[in-house]
Amino acid sequence: MLRQSIVTFFIGMLISCNTIETANKITILERQILVNGNPYLIKGICYHPVPKGSLSRDFGNLTQDLNLMVEAGINTIRAYAPIDDVAVLDEICAAGIKLIIGFGYNQDGNFDILSGTFIDYINKYKNHDAILLWELGNEYNYHPEWFEGDLKNWYQLLNNASELIHKNDPLHPVATAHGELPDSLALSTCPSIDVWGMNLYRWDTPNKVFEEWVAISTKPMYLSEAGSDSYMTIEKEGYHAGVNERAQADANQNILNIIFNATEVCSGVTMFSFTDGWWKAGNNNKQDTGGQAPNSSGVPYDGAPNEEYWGMVDIERNKKRAFEILKRKYNQSIE
Image 1 (cartoon, rainbow, N blue to C red):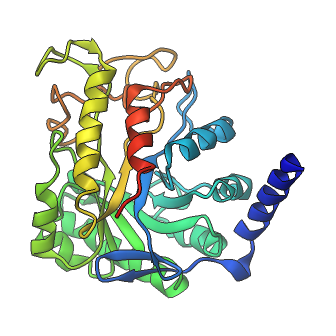
Image 2 (image 1 turned 90 degrees about the vertical axis):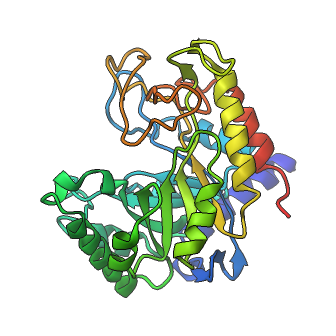
Image 3 (image 1 turned 45 degrees about the horizontal axis):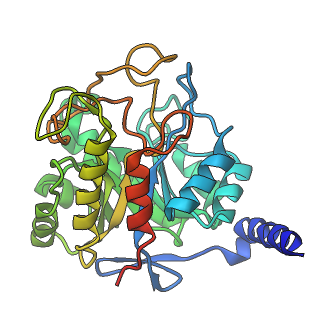
């Protein structure tokens, strides 16, 4: 009977996740994100699953991944690109997890901002209960060369895209993932952005950003990327060089403690990232050191972003020490 009840529950969840009449309404109240009128704290993870030897995202391991995410208390996935598969969206929704769907500027016309096809995706899926936020761009402020050398061009495109989303979808706010704290140009040019995500790497002490945000904006914010990798390029601060899960776990624990002590300002975090990414540097069939990322000298504790070592689990889905930190923090009651 118990097994039958569980099956019945998940079938019911799958049906409700894809029922237009039951679509959640996500709204903004001052600095808070609300889901059907209730405050929503993002306990999230960045998720871009690429198998060994590949460069392409693949959801073949989704069921196992979602089981691990549910165990860890994750309630939100940040996806860097649209997921055009209703079965994947339904399964994520049935697990009780919501999505922040990201759109790139130039993705060869595949639901991107340049071609305008991003709005086709939004109109296709705006009534799906998995959706929490639409998110435009990922730290594009580090790349003015993509916009004729002038970031104002990007910010104007960003604001225009946000306005178009608002005209088509009244159910979901629009976010952007900015590299670090946005400046006055970003804020003044993009009044249509509802939620500011920030990819933030300030060692294991991001606390000052919340004071800085209060001083410049009354809108909600969250950390769209934060965390550390599990490889030390050098020995430093008592952490040995080489693979070092303790360094990653300690850094993530300190970062999460600070974030969840600032929930009057910060709407949460999507930690980077769920699984190691072997595709990011060197040979895709093995785990390489190295890799570069903009503005990454603040990565704990060696100032070096070893791009293939950021997972809470490794490529085989073995839990790292950082997974247990995430699980403990995300499953705590937040007063």
